[in-house]
Image 1 (cartoon, helix red, strand yellow):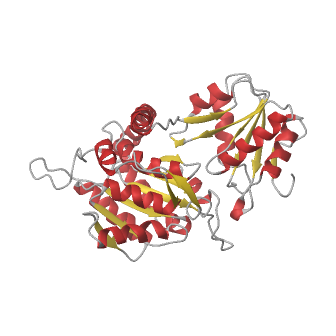
Image 2 (cartoon, helix red, strand yellow):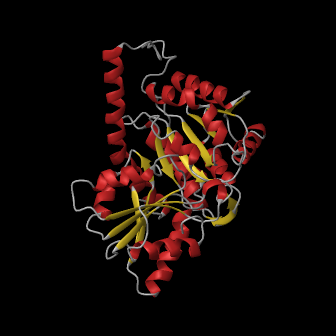
Image 3 (cartoon, rainbow, N blue to C red):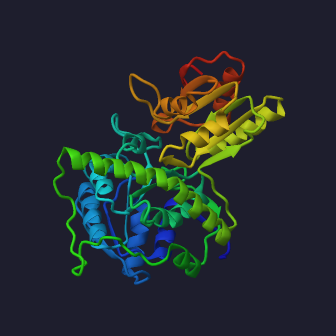
Length: 386
């Protein structure tokens, strides 16, 4: 294993891509993702990789090129953020419906408007039903590790779906942290050779991609995607286990922190999981039995895994870094649904961090104490209600 280095999240993802050496990368720059493709384009220019780097005029074009390249049988990567992901939206469900195993890094940033370049999960959450496997990172090390594991998940014969690897904008993309990369030879062996199942350019076994579907075929093809998503759980667990063998770093579908004996558990995504763990430590020292968990795999939605972690608790606090205006945060109804059928804990939803609002131990402490004492509202807004 290589020595520990100091690196930001964007460069860590670019390093993982360099070690994997994909066939094609098509991308368009957008803050805070730009560094990923900027750095990777330097690797291409310097001859460090054999990747065909395609400069396009927009994010929509970037994903269109990726769909075509992956359909032809190329291992294909891209990256974007915020409005870039929104501009790709037309192609997101097409990529998944065509079952192309594209890997896309998303540097999570709020959606305009008002115009804002800072972090929340509005971009990823707005794309959550487009048929992409979605994984999240807590820190720079995990952003690198997820980038290494993503092609193994996407390209598995039981999955064959695109993967969105999320890392929080600026908090992870631009912050320099200590990280221990793997040796390039180890990464190459772990990821393996890309063996597309039905490449468009296989003239011995010609196929067609992206054709018109009538109602009956459309329904069946959508259900096949549902089945592939369900199988992705087992594939993720296998990939996580294999990755632990080469790295010593163990990952789970749902990451837990002091949940076993907790009366109250907070569910949270991304870099804020680290802040929530620090809050749990502080409140544990004060005698409050609280815990935290993060669905590392957000799509497919880990309902059974969350029910196992959260079942029997007195209260559950779902922290959402995005809001469905006029409703709840996106995770809250899904956590409630995951717990339906059992004894329902007292459920709370807190919206926080929109547009880069600070996610602090002090803020998390206040809402967790309110939940633990039974004084919190069902839906609250950090900085407004708490």
